[in-house]
Length: 497
Image (cartoon, rainbow, N blue to C red; front, side, top):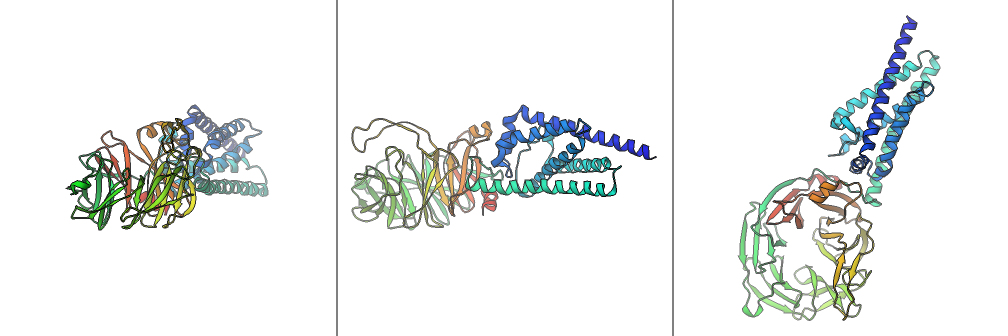
């Protein structure tokens, strides 16, 4: 009977070893056949993103080594312990995925990828039990003390493997938020809620209050759209302007209730009127051309202009009164190449936290300023483009520039509730090519410390891609052609806060 029991044990151990050999060799080969896809899947994992490059080779290599060890009787016991450790690590990974991630692509390779995460957990649990039984059977003929040692060693290996995965998870989180190696973490829970037909592709956000989003129009600057925030209905009004004050087509609308402003930075002119009456009754004319302007309050705007002394673009504060008196805010914008195109970027104001943010177009930098426009710190976006890559024709006269080539990094931005949203134009590491080419990517950063939080896709609407956007409350609003698409940010905000 004892001999028969021993034979059954040997048969069981052999079957478990052959099963693991088949499993490891199949999984490793599937991963290496499409190694690039395997790296992409690891890169999208919230646990192992920072180590995707190393693990893409280490995991299949470990599977091959363990599969080879199980072939030889002299190495079989070590191979079984190693298999227990690796499978325990895989199981711990799945448990964390099920509890802390909304979406992660499976990276097991082959037909195993067709399993859901719960099925994966059951499958891995069975595999762990099988190898544990095999190790117990392997020690059947040894002393009781040796058997206890074997069980203790098995439990120790399982604990060590689980702890290693938890340590990788914690360390990867730290690296992703503070020293990110240009690996995006997508929040796949951010979904489109609705699309509003605006009947025009030239609208932009001019301002907002509790009842309306006020939309300016690039093509017809005196026409304003009032988008009801509850019903999504759009009313169009026309602003009345005295004939002597008729603005050029370069004018843009800004609204800070109870006033609206028609601002033409090219000719340094500001017209003001009351929201609701839509008739301008004040005009201010200045002496300096400016651009990239944002209302500070009802008394001033912050803008960007060419400084004749520093010979570069600088920020400036302009008072909204006769002659538009201004003061340059030097020492904020950082010159790299010419001080003109290389400091080009987008200025935004977070009305919730009263922070100003200036994001550069051609490099991986943004500057966070306090309410008095004093520099607090310089943050960096995910990409590694620290130096603006520009081709600029020779400048014949001060203030005359011609940009002939550039690499755009940050297309446009918006800051809201201590978060900075950036439409990025640079593809990250381990990102699948097809979604990147077919969508627009929004990266999100914390304004508390400049750390990266998450990213999400914005899909084309009626084949029209996203061009500009804003954020209000817990929703993302994107202008795509003639439509305003609305995405729910709750899944992202619930993670980042």
